[in-house]
View 1 (cartoon, rainbow, N blue to C red):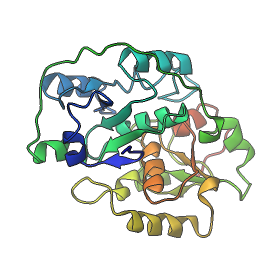
View 2 (view 1 turned 180 degrees about the vertical axis):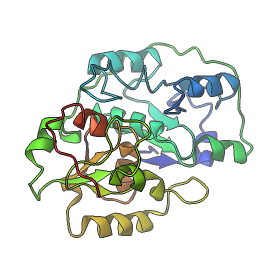
View 3 (view 1 turned 90 degrees about the vertical axis):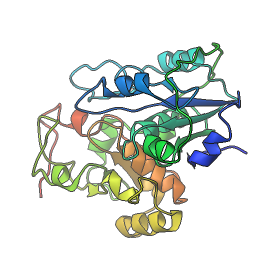
Length: 281
């Protein structure tokens, strides 16, 4: 059996010794870029490799391409191969329960055409609460070859957003908090507000009190209400830098609402050009 959205702690625990499963620890904090690496060094799921959101899951920043631009595809493909990922592997990513870096890795593998990838439901906290094994031992993966290529139908660029601002065929969904969306506060980026016409769906609303995703039917109803008759294929997800937006994309997939896309540059790229319009409300 393969998994393409989420796996439970019990399912992952049952495959810890399965060589066809590859685990990535994606723990990350926006305001402390090395917090995830420190947490990994202290304790992690046995066999997990560490994926750094700033170095492994993002490319070089130019000042105009956002805070977490996509890496060069061939660079990312080579990194996957060094970590033992080939096209026959089931990949599982986890981070903090309310985090989104695991969803970013999930999306990036799908971007390259690898569908057998899932996020650990409930993240690190759920694993620890369940009393499952942890270790400080760092695995030594056997390098292999991963083959993939970017799928253009999985994402859009800034020019697509700009050229479709007044087009009803595009529904932009912003995953940031309501306060950041409205422009009331902006603790990270230089300009507050949102892309004109965007709708707000804070990614944490996809989770229950235990940090796990809400049931598929509940997610489906919530997104259907927000889309107000729109189709999943019309949706473009964004956030501050293309990370937490992946959580909304994952939630829609869990809900059976497939075909939405990611705007990787997101708000931090949008505001790099003062000529692009912004909205506040």
